[in-house]
Image 1 (cartoon, rainbow, N blue to C red):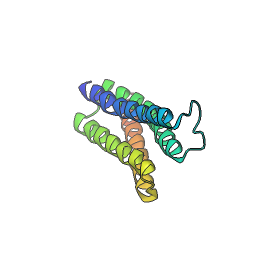
Image 2: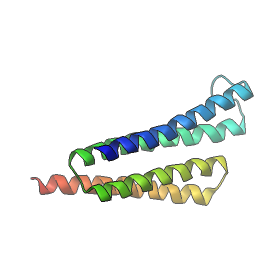
Image 3: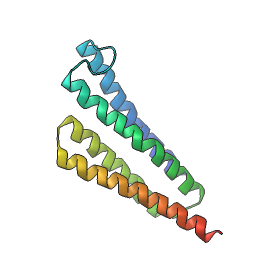
Image 4: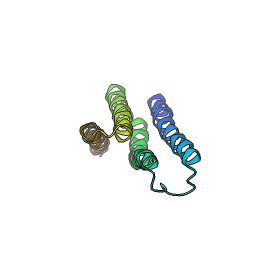
Length: 127
């Protein structure tokens, strides 16, 4: 379960930093809601929303995988790859890199699929 806790610290820490960046920009640009038509805010809001779209479901997957005692080395690889892909993905929005965004999104999806396949494999073996 320790790996799950590390996953939570890293990925929810990233989501928090992205949210703080939005708040910082809202104060600077004096925008209360939405993006106010400001490109900097648009670039900050999207990676935060995207991170939430992936971090929350993957967190449930990691919790279930850890609870089922899936191989820790495999789980560690998934967690590290997922976190790295989320960092690159967030940076790709901020620095307008389409190729980095596409590659990091692909790694994210691969991590999610691998976690699901691992969970299903363990569940099938326990039947």
